[in-house]
Length: 424
Image (cartoon, rainbow, N blue to C red; front, side, top):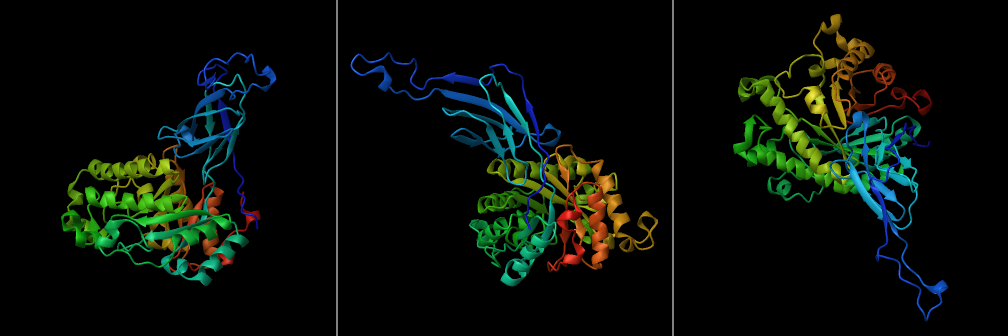
């Protein structure tokens, strides 16, 4: 089944002044015809035409790492979303970035500074754990499942809980601390996924990393957690994120990008910090990762506890949707009704109300994210019947947001997933 995704594209052209578009000869003034060679045989290079512009996303946020083609010239937008290209063969300007809508901007001699708006695709994804990624038969099953349903995305773990790096990484620090535990070849799996027309995301577990804190005890916060403010742990995970982009993943998704929860939080000292300091630590890390991976063409997303979209504070975690989403292409609250307390929203057991509980969390989050970011929740794909999973998915579809299903063993069934003709 074709994996094409219907996209909405918006284009804005800024006036018709000559600002940003100039013409010049690459050799200065055109030479006079030779007295010994007939003028009809005189050749000169065509004059260069330069075009300057910017590409933005929803809410006017700049989008770096976008490929722009103008005639025979091509380049990528910088950290401000800007580009400048020169060609002797001017024509339409083609704009593309994996996971985003494509765009063609008309060009003419009177065209001025150009600006294009692109939009992220709607993600409908499945999580691919280490075991599934490392097993040819299981992985082929997931590819076939995507082909038969509306699924258009696979999310691969490359660094999982505990700190294990699941492939033969070139990041030296991972080898030094004994973190490399190869389960699969990401380049091969990415190639297979892209051949099937699928978008690829890698999930990187960040600060919950016992291997890192054992090797670097000075950066330990408590238990298996590295301090989110620690320089070394931040730099290490940024290197892994950059490598993931270089391997060919379309998007980097950060998980456990927070301070610890539960009993660990009570002994770590984090609750003695002002909320603003906790949030600033996570926010500044996201800004650093974005600056590193976006120019490489990767999108950036992060997972947060769903409870923080329904409360006014950070729950001691350093996660607030307003501040964090300002640095992300997508924000993914983990909406698992089985994890909610009995009585939540007045339901005796929230796990028995997949649509209502999922819908409530999505509605709360939509009102709190930055306009330049999209909401893409993780949905519960475990402990439920296929019909219950479909209800949670329907809550997301009814609100026009993408979704990713979480299941530890990547055990998904076709009856739980919508078909192409059931989604917009």
